[in-house]
Amino acid sequence: MPAHNSSPDIDDIISKLTWNGVTGFLILGFLASFAILVIAGKWEIVPATLFTTIAAWFSYAALRYSREKFRLDLFDKRFEIYSSTVNFCGRVQQIGLFSDTPEQRSENVETMRIAEECFRGLGYHKSLALFGGDIHDLFKELNTACSWLSSRPNPRDDNEWKQWLKHSEFVVTTVDRLPDLFAPYMHFGDYRR
Figure 1 (cartoon, one colour):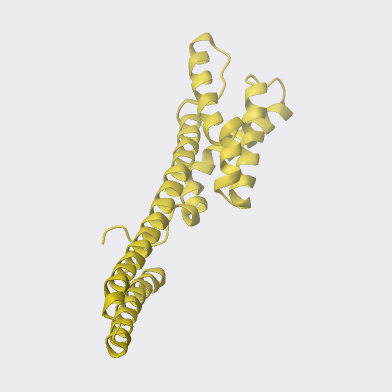
Figure 2 (tube, rainbow, N blue to C red):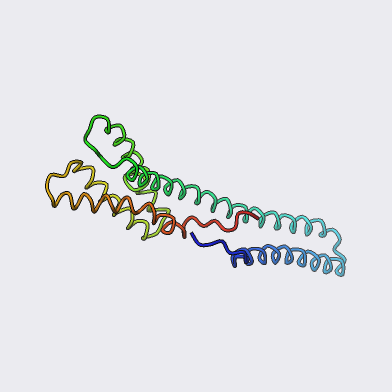
């Protein structure tokens, strides 16, 4: 993840300027409308102008809230897939993958369930909607490795051992690369303010 920078983020500055700019524009618009109505002697329209200005300000506040809510929902959905991917790679790193022993079968089922949540089945289709091509490529490679390892739990010859080690190493080393790969999708801004 990128190091925290104490200087303000450009998006935060633009957001503040836009918020202050819109609020200032509405206040200035109301005052100008009020002045024009007073000069023209149309006092009966002043309450409608006041109501319209307040309604416009509330509409803009609702728009900002909706935008932030959308960002938060998107972050939550992306984080769910990210945490499942970390969990899958961590399980492979911790307990190995797809041993053919009876004791290991329940672990194999759980590992495949986690894989389904992030890069196989429904998880893959969710990721298509939530991430870019770089994550899709990673998930295709993870799926290939997972498929190969699950179909050959006990390699029989040197060539299968080499392939088994290659795929196992890919899954195990992926866990260290995940924070950097997902960083562009997981950044939510400076949430501490």
